[in-house]
Image 1 (tube, rainbow, N blue to C red):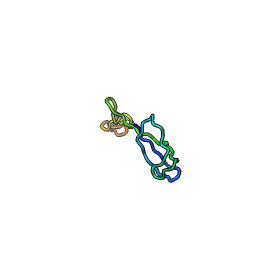
Image 2: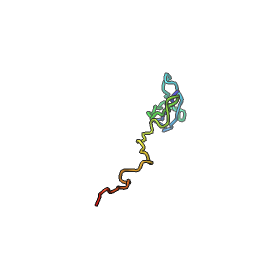
Image 3: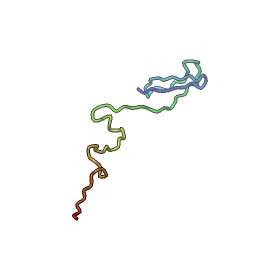
Image 4: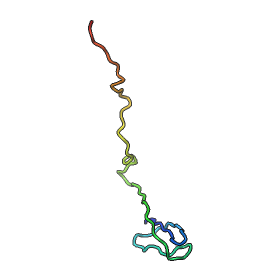
Length: 83
């Protein structure tokens, strides 16, 4: 069941209510008993559960380079010129 947020236009009282999606929105404020309760729009949170979902799947990490491999700039150069 989703959690809905409401705010009263009369007294600015805010509340969260656990409601079924099929239930009609609340209208009466529990604080001032006025019929001025308005449903707010808020961001919903979700959590991926079950097999096949991993925490690292959606982290946005860039590919990591192998730190054991020296870069081309750090390799020593050898001279093979004969004099």
